Length: 353
Image (cartoon, rainbow, N blue to C red):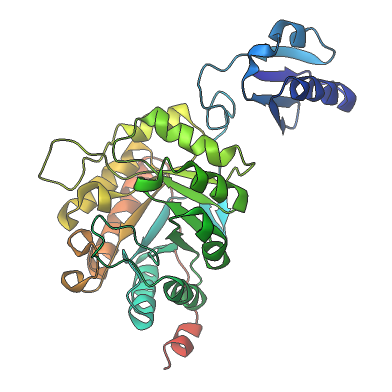
């Protein structure tokens, strides 16, 4: 439930409400606005008499929350969340564009791809150092070596980096290098990992499970939020259906539904959503039209030689064309794609030129 305090409520009156809620075994999440304070009650509130709370001093009204996910619910947090990552805004009027190779294949390859993505208009660099693969014989990533290359690419381009973390014990290591932790579809309900990512305090991008309902997806986000980490992004990356023409079925419905149910930013992944590069552009543009706060796209200079997911990767020139097209769609839905500054001169040093 939500306890809405009066505009004239004192600090002592607010503290009394919070104390009463905590005595009942629930957590409190106060939101201090310009005019009034709203207290969110998180946990099993069945032992709390909301009518009794409503009669306490300073209380204007008590509103029950019908959704099982409290902190992720727009009922709990009516205003959309905006996350700032090294100057890049995610969830506001600007459209966030994340791009890069599926996996980090080497230092030179990554930095050259990162520069090409930045020049095309990307703001955040993606790349996998640890790769969860369906087959145990497939390339599993370069590990910490890949993380170091990502850090060098950030130094060369100025772009923050997003990379996947696969298990709780790896969270501290990945957090040393990354700016955003990615939780992959196979780990959406890995609750130990969700808690560890939440406790890190890092921004987290949570991909929807391949067979997950939207409610299950939001409940997974609730685990991260319950650790007092409000920097959570949702990512629609396609779900498994009976269709064989594409790798997954991108659920375009999920974007406006999630935007209505939750205040969290939502990112579209048309690369995994389709699995084929020729469909990435149309789905990316459709996602923006549907209200997505950003996209995450796989880019590789030689997709046919990629160590993973080459079939769904765009070449840099195709990605540059897509960015220009996304700008047009963004303007129609009152979004903006900010112009990117040139990569720093540091890239020449990093590349040994």
